[in-house]
Image (cartoon, rainbow, N blue to C red; front, side, top):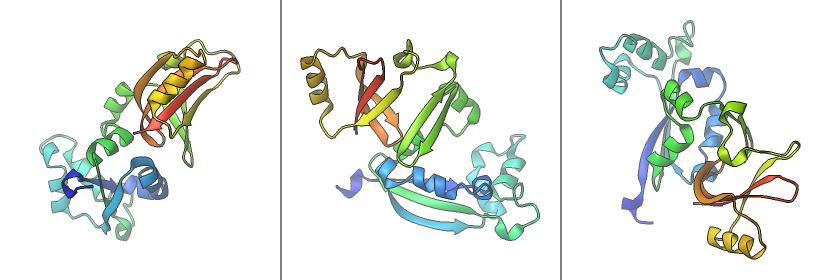
Length: 207
């Protein structure tokens, strides 16, 4: 791959994540397996007032600016332990690094995140992800489920066009797809159909 095809993006593991022991989880979710990106550099940073002010410069003058400075400096989560106030800064590198990380992490504004993905939670088990939805926000493809049935995603090495052709030869009706999706393993192209027991099956090819 040509050097000009690579992008770099900065990820910060901030004091709240450090205090809640989420470093390992974050690194796992941002691994090359999930994102297709590699480490370009990493270091532990003790954030000075000047660095914090530069990092949140776009919010300077807003009423919540002082609390942002206290947050990134670790004063809110390590009020009595200044020696533990730090962030972990990681640079990831790869094709479309900025877009890939944004898709995986979602909006930084929690209010916007709830608007874009309302009523959705995810459980991660290694490389597997289980998505939970409340009844008012079930995806269209998953509606009209048969009691006791499931929704399963299977990854394929075959081109998605071959999957569509095979399903057609077998007389299987495709409910949706091919469509772009973002799953636990990263961006993918998926097709949806139901098996004879009413389970919703998603066959996906990683992009």
